Length: 265
Image 1: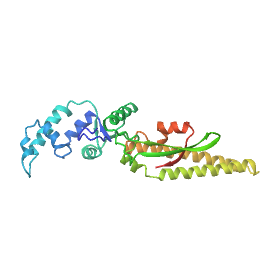
Image 2 (image 1 turned 180 degrees about the horizontal axis):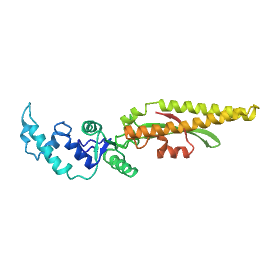
Image 3 (image 1 turned 180 degrees about the vertical axis):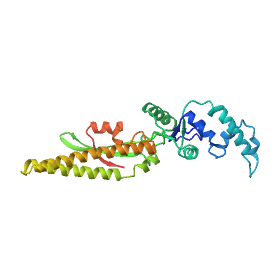
Image 4 (image 1 turned 90 degrees about the vertical axis):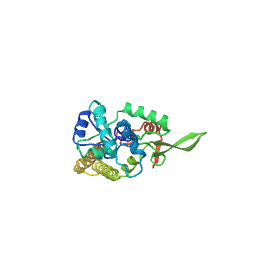
């Protein structure tokens, strides 16, 4: 949850000491209208109720100043826990402090949030970022199939799973460059294996063995490097706590039960 506007999203974070520096540098969530009228009135101790009753134009300056003073004294100056921000509030904070860190969520915290969120809304928290909420139109759907022997006849069974995913993570996952690169490297690996087999079985020139092994090994290493770089990029840039659907427990359960992936939506 964002500690400024109380939205469910939390992408960036700073320590309590860093937050005090940010506020000293001039960050004012009230004047920047990041806080709604109800919370502004709450922090200004309800002394400016008449402002909300008046017709436009209304001057919120006195309420904003009082709210800021009380907020700094009663929360910022004494808070010892880290502060978390949504994308909107993070953009406002970064004007005063540029070293905001991606917010990380432990597996225990993620599981707890997911249970609470499910009970409260009937929805699930996004499995990839642990912040946004999954929805029917954004969830990652994976279809599986398996041939099963029933009454001495082989029948094809169909099953699927839905991995909770928010709209933001859905847009991130539309980027196919990494997948294309991995597919290309996989193709090169098979090419290297063919060269290796040619050197072992057909050619008298054993240099093909060296070529085939080198090509396959190098491509395999490059796939690992690409995945590692991509993982770090997604974690650092978008704050994802999970980046590969193959790590999801439901997916692992299906694969261990010999289901085969037929389609991914």
